Image (cartoon, rainbow, N blue to C red; front, top):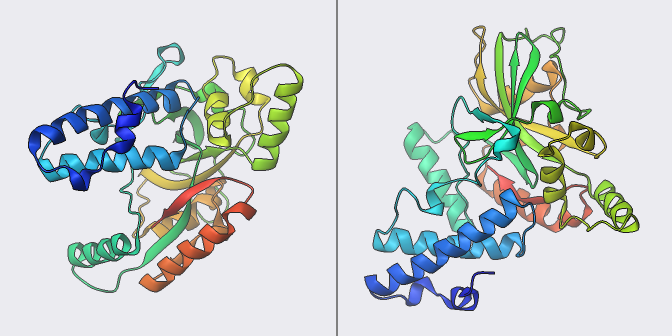
Length: 309
């Protein structure tokens, strides 16, 4: 742990009154975030919970915004960790950016107001979906055939895990073209690789029986499995995928809405979580969906860490 971790926990952005104090607090918070990013993304071995990490990150962002201390090398401007060179690297066609996080009802209402303002009308439709807690992945299909699989890495460059991804049963090696959606000449999609909770628990029991250390959580089990140098190890792990975004689509196919895109993915054979996707125009339904999902998250067979709107 960082030597000044206890001091970091005591930092209260609201209590910081002057720039000099803010600069010192920002320095300590950045050190902590970088350390925990390294543990999470590179070692796949976190030592704090996601909630604790989010708290440190939120403090850093609040102080940077309030005192104008944001810099290009700040963790708030960067995603994840450095790619493992042993796996080879892939430059993403477009950066894999992080989501803007909000933690209360006001944040959602402010987001809705921003959408209305930027779109220029108040008839806005929202797609709601669980925020899966797995490993972000990008798949590239050329003429309907999977030719690249890459992790998010630092957001610009990811790790080449093509051989590993091809061992996952729910990842199609070739796209379907007979479901009313012609196969595009080039398709770049993004999603999340995850491990079901029951399968995660079984895997950890086997590891303990074999004298191996258990995985900390399903997210790290999935990440560690995909980022193996030996695809044979990945093939032995119970991994699954949900796709949720089209980044590029060749052949003249375009989508007017995110919801329309989600309907097309399964027709190409790409798995989506259709049971948990909702289309709404109602802000109250967004808040209700979040409350219901939060109350039932212990009943899900995969981990989530919020809702994507």
